[in-house]
Length: 140
Image 1 (cartoon, one colour):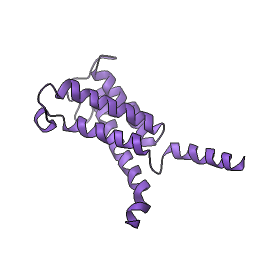
Image 2 (cartoon, helix red, strand yellow):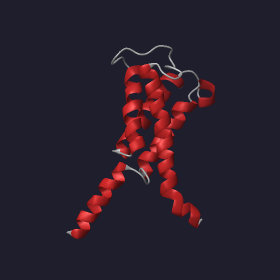
Image 3 (cartoon, helix red, strand yellow):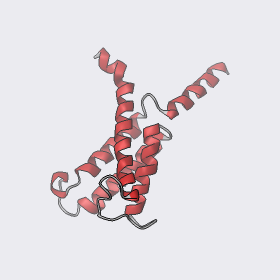
Image 4 (cartoon, one colour):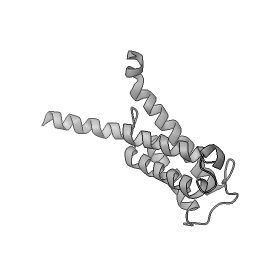
């Protein structure tokens, strides 16, 4: 168990970076019609609700999560946007994610909620700020 305890913050950081990066890729594909392109088939018009805003959240908040900057708030925004997508788009089709095609939004929503609750782990810009604050507090 000691190995798991010692590596916890590093694994959490890797989890944050990978989940955030995959989320960013969804936003990039939707907004810029690259890679596989948008899932809806065409690039949403600027500021159209909800697809453009969802993609903008994926790009901006996902990047913040990857960098570990404002991580908890960005992750909470990501989680909420995916919960919204699940309940407004997928839940109407059927009860369970396997039936309604909502596995990806459900997994993103819970993954980002986990990051919001447990924090960014190591290798986060947030960590640099909190370290400098701790040093200042210890010096005072």
